[in-house]
Length: 243
Image (cartoon, rainbow, N blue to C red; front, side):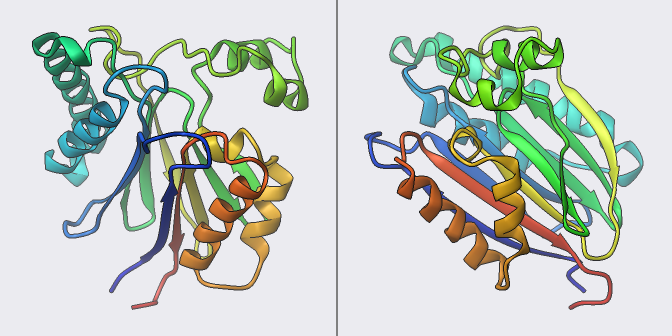
């Protein structure tokens, strides 16, 4: 029985030459892994960093009784791998990536997050952000010095305070989530959230259609609004009793 249906889409956008985003869906083991990574724009090797990070996450082992510890180890190993690869390849120096991942087992999940990609929970018509942006603007929001509309247009909205591959020490946000029948998760890069407000995200999630159709709809909407960045959308639904 597959408790987790999903849909996924990624697009380079209308201005970038390459897609530095990547996503991962791993459903073969008891713990299911869903993740997105956004290679740092303007840095060499952003696509290498995002893909390498997800390869490490995919190859890691996850025990249901040690899930938080396993996830922390996997993310820290990804950070080490990106740093080591950049150190050994001068053309890749300075590369990095965000990471937002959700590991699910039955109705229990663990979210791990570094950077400004995001995870949301859509439950009974309400959208709630599950992650906090590790950005300068995100910090200003938490301090009450900006409102969400100001944040979307702030000239320093892309300034990251931390990301995988930048420093040996990494502060990973890790926390639990418990799902209810009918819940949906939206995991995405900032190519989506930089152009579409949360109430609009919720409206699209409320539309009729399959998850894959909705994921593609998000991509179409970002490109219709300028497509200034790579965009990746991963949708996951939790449905008890569906096979």
